[in-house]
Amino acid sequence: MTDFQLLTRAAQKVETAIGETGRFAGTAKHTYANNLLTVIKVYTEIEDCNSISML
Image (tube, rainbow, N blue to C red; front, side, top):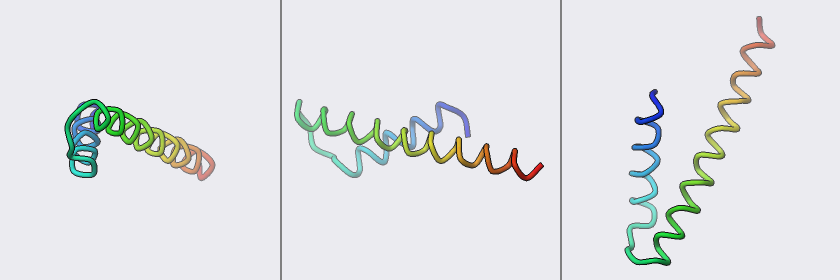
């Protein structure tokens, strides 16, 4: 998956989860997206470490 695809899917997930408009919804969406991408990053790093240790 490319970075663009990842960000597009994350944005779609955030929009579905929050869906509101306005400044408070914007803050909630940014927070949600940041947390989601952090989890994906940590998971990816764990997967990379697991595949390295298996070599």
